[in-house]
Length: 371
Ligand SMILES: Cc1ncc(C[n+]2csc(CCOP(=O)(O)OP(=O)(O)O)c2C)c(N)n1
Ligand SMILES: [Mg+2]
Image 1 (tube, protein in one colour):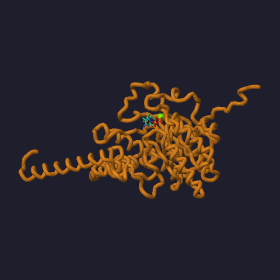
Image 2 (image 1 turned 180 degrees about the horizontal axis):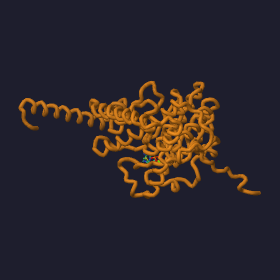
Image 3 (image 1 turned 60 degrees about the vertical axis):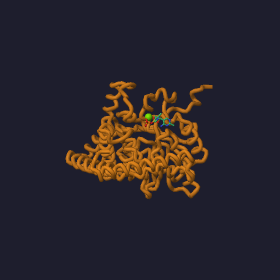
Image 4 (image 1 turned 135 degrees about the horizontal axis):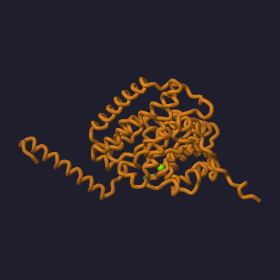
């Protein structure tokens, strides 16, 4: 008996474009307008991301999780969704979020520390940002199970990182998805780092995708810097989820070109060479070369997009920075129906301090002095 004959093989990475933007297989069946849209969302996300980093460095934003390098994975996946599918994100999702109708102003507000930035427009099927790693996966499975029980026809796409696959929630969620056959697609953005933990210390599996075999559904390994390949596999997986209620685990291999968050310094744990190697594989550049060869990308069009992105970003910053302050008492409002005593006294203390501050300010106005 030969053991190897009985081992599941590791999946081969799917690509449509090579690293130089050359078509590998057949021309994908995507309309020019959709290709243009995909490029726009990737480019806009990159610009918005760069601006967020600047705002944070200027003290105008709190901690921010940059997406630089992951635009193809995010936009490839989100453009494969239908509007009434559900998107269940982690926290590094700016590209997909913008494409899924969450205004940049909202994203900026959230990272400026305003909880109102995490309010999703009522007609948009997105769940809010989830910072606790992997907790969104069981939520996605529950949502997909609910859809199935209500007659199906929609799919759920949940996104998480390579680090998230080491959490119990990942295993519990995928196990349930397999047992219950729910219409969910599990999309792992393997950016090869979980803060300072590299992929090889995260798992001894060759790929994340192959873990799907253990849960009894398919796993697909795709080049996450190839927007066309990501779009193609995600679209097929979502369709299968909607029509056959078969879940899929997708692993999109990509790279975080920036820091984990603005509170992190990646030069302390990864090499300059590794970064350079992945900068060469920039997903936007690769897609641009392909579009240029097709006659879709031109310098003039790029200038138009630059201007459009700049205007939209400026508007979003203005709106996010000029929003009226929330009522501080809101802090106490939504967790408990009956406020516990300690919180009640904190709320009273807050109210008293605010009243005293108001009186002080009135005095200054009347007396024209300094407090
Ligand atoms: C349950 C939990 N544990 C730890 C953290 C701190 N933390 C935030 S992000 C992160 C790493 C996540 O890595 P990965 O899943 O690969 O996503 P990426 O940050 O690379 O997008 C950790 C440990 C957290 N937010 N939640
Ligand atoms: Mg990661």
